[in-house]
Length: 116
Image (cartoon, rainbow, N blue to C red; front, side):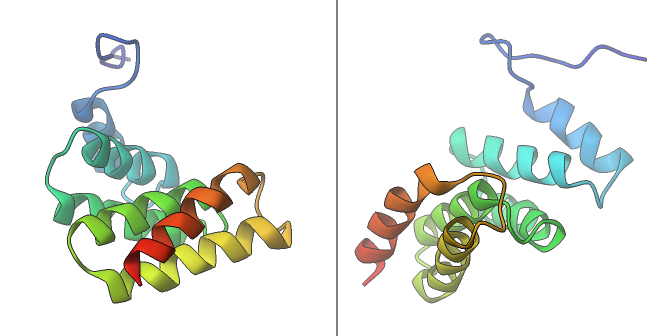
């Protein structure tokens, strides 16, 4: 098996995440990782939304996936799409259905406020 490509800080690079998605299109980790990495690097936001939307569908209580998708949608000016995504992330964290994510609630609420 080939070693995963790492960036200068020891994190997986875009190509490694793309390979994960190619091997397992229904894998949460690859979809979330790729979408989040694209978002962090200021890449194609439409592509980030595509992967993050699948990630949220695969794991509806993963709070960080909701936040990343909400950020990407907001950056694209798609405020009305971002609002329910962020609200669902807050609900998942607050309800205890998620494994953590409480620390992300203030950031999601602040982003919601900026969306109006």
